[in-house]
Length: 264
Image (cartoon, rainbow, N blue to C red; front, side, top):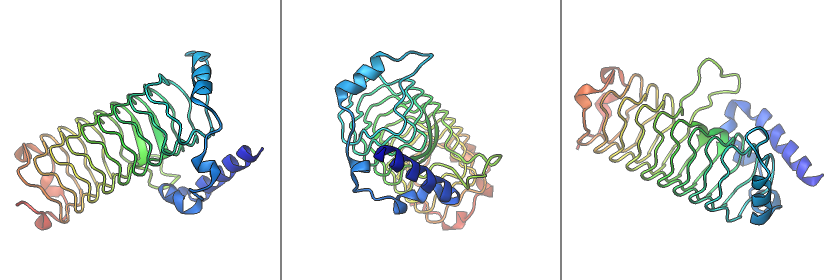
């Protein structure tokens, strides 16, 4: 009953803060047992996964799984909507096609995890670690402020705002101050994403969309920008040193604050 009440409360918070859904942490006690404890063991999680099928995937909706070591588990296709996985270890886990909408993964460790085709809508992943993770083709409208995605892949992923459906406010990826060094973002949609002060050193942004993205203070030194769309991207104090293929980027002349770029 208590867990149900907490989950309902979180749902109310999400609805009430819809216009600013990615700033919900100020309304939740992150030190409470609901956000820091686990109601299942790894063995119990494994049992649920063993009994799942494509027609009836394992459903962990609203479950408290914070702090568990779930490294290496195959959780592909599982439903983790509104689950709490704060500081949970998911290194090397298989999370392809999982539903992590409205889930909490604050400071979670997903190093080397596979999240191909995963759905992360209004997911809270502040300071999460996803170094070497594979998020190819994922839908990511998550708060990844301060997260680490060194050498990760978001190729063909959708992190941009869907302007056809903004009844919940501007839902897009927030990667403010994130470490995206060496990121594979080929063909990724990062339109209107918040990348302020992010490190994109050596990132592959080939054919990616940065339309309307916030790049203030971001570091794109040595990044590959062949075919990258910069239309309306804000480049105030953006570091763009020795980029690869800038002459073949799209709409760079339509970017904002180009005169305030840092080129050396």
